[in-house]
Amino acid sequence: MKLQQLRFLVEVAKSGLNVSQAAERLHTSQPGVSKQVRLLEDELGLDIFVRNGKRVVGITEGGRRILEIAERVLIEADNLRAAGREAARPDAGTLVVATTHTQARYRLPAIIARFRGVYPDVRFILHQGNPVQVAEEVVAGRADLAIATEALDRYPDLVMLPCYQWNRVVVAPKGHSLLEQPVLTLEQLARWPLLSYDSAFTGQSRIHEAFARRELHPDMVLTALDADVIKTYVRLGMGVGIIAAMAFDADQDHDLGVLDAGHLFTSSTTRIAIRRGAYLRRYTYAFIESFASHLDAHTVDLALRGHGEDPGL
Image (cartoon, rainbow, N blue to C red):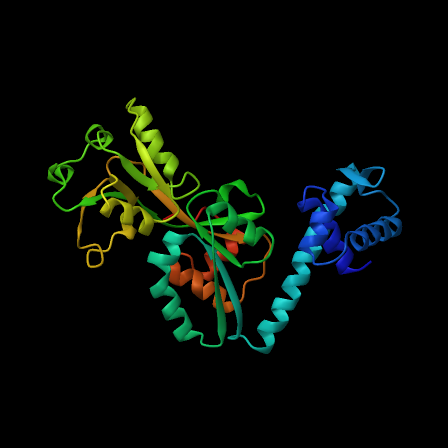
């Protein structure tokens, strides 16, 4: 039995039983994957997959148990390597963080700068994507941490740690009549063309829900992947923007007016997600605590082991 065989097995399952796709992700050949999985089945004395001719069409009951064990073995193999590197060079290595544009653009720059000052020998890699993509980066082992607001709770293989809550503001060109309102209402907002985030991002569903509860049907003329695009088209006069409060910079956005919208929409919670059972390097704990000060190493360890209460905010 080889670790490579376990990797092939797990990747076939993760690829929806598509052996060709698994081979592509593993940078090897489809016949090679099929051969190694067959050899593993022969050694274990059971069929892991159900086949129709040469096609894999299902997973046997015994195969599901084997897959669960194989995933744990691969995680522990990664943990052994990480522990070895920790012992050899505790303050050197690589930290890969997958996150969304809003976090990467507005929340993380100062934190990463401080982290690199303390850990100059750690190679910091940032992967950017939508919430589903960043969650899958961690599930697949391509990233150590995911930071996002949406979608992380869809993945049972991830342990989620709440970091902070935030809400939204409305932006419009200075001089816009909407900015004259002393207290903004949803009815006033719904009279204007609106620009906000794509539905996969940053609590967009909460915006729709707020309008729906009041039986309002605003004209959402543009949805975008990040606040910078939204603000660009607000400046062009396409409508009024709804963005995360952290995405408004009074200096850089001096030509825009802003209204608080926290009373209109339910607040959102940004979380860090870690693959269940993962071994964390010392500097990974330090990065997590720098992002959310209430998440010290003890609190994170309790969450990873499934003990203790939700750390809360």
